[in-house]
Length: 186
Image (cartoon, rainbow, N blue to C red):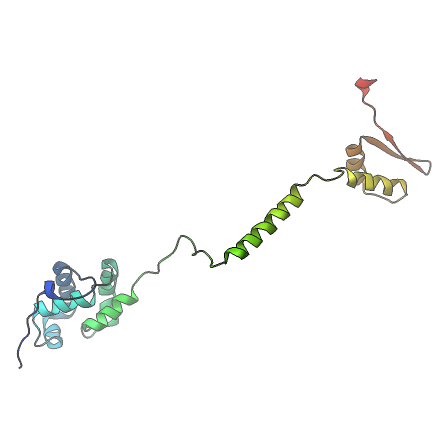
């Protein structure tokens, strides 16, 4: 065998490392799932400290709950042999939960388009809010149709005559609309 390298977990380099306790936990879970014989055969010539350093480096950018989920899935995905550290990293990455966002990012709309849409919306609101020339035009239109002899629905006659304060009658083939006078005004 060649020269043995020593490496401390604290000397491992990476963007975010696991702590030595976390790396020891991962190594312990591998050992407990596969036994000392398979672990020794897999990593012959590497010290436990080197293994923990590599685990800390390879799994350092992954959240701890995701690593634990990967360790839980490990015996099912690799039933006969322990995965190497790269395979364990891929297994853990596959267990990452989907991030949900509270809202979609804002659209990339130019200010000119926003201003044009705002002006259009304000114009539409102004048309809706604008006072109408005659709010009872619908009832007056129905009165003209009633007097012309067109058959209206009963509800149309009731609502239109009430809106105009009139009594509509069709007697003897003649139609007429007369105002309703208030009894108290008489």
